[in-house]
Image 1 (tube, one colour):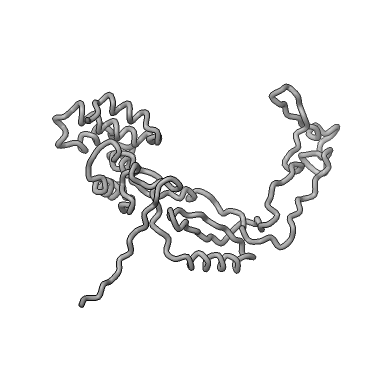
Image 2: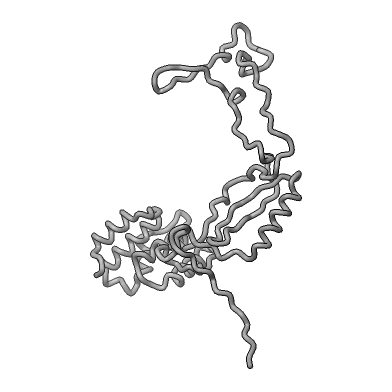
Length: 258
């Protein structure tokens, strides 16, 4: 039995996946037109576009907001810099020499006159007590003694052979041989599967339609490259790693004629 407008609104606002604000805005606008303006059903997307309005540059917002819900795999590491080298450490790690706790934190030469007011700094605890602030030089560094840890310059991407999700490994120039070995080991495992989408695909759970076509049209107008994922465009139909079986993509084979 189809939901009423109030039930649809409640479901959208209480979605356990947590709809992004722009996606929620599209869902509410579509629901409004379907339930409150049935005379505009034939011009659904035009009316929804009018409800969403334009961007500051004058473009219709509908293209960007629907493209933002396009189902895809987001590795989530595009904004991160290089990580620490994962190559084996040659020498055991030794922390830097701990400075004299009474030393001035401003300068080694005490350029100011009189007693240094920076030598004793305390911070308050929630229970009302105070203790000397250790400072970054006196804190014990937490570091793995088994890996190099230097800034990585060689990027190696490892794909999970079940989900297709990727993990980035970093190696420094001193461990370029180790990086080449890891690349060879990963290549020997074969071609990884297409990654299971982990973002988008929330609008199809509320409204039936040819969403692969809808996403494709709006992604094109938003100048966003997109192809429909193998696992479908509805987030509810995607396999959940560790909970549901992830189907393998069938391989095509050439069958010789008789």
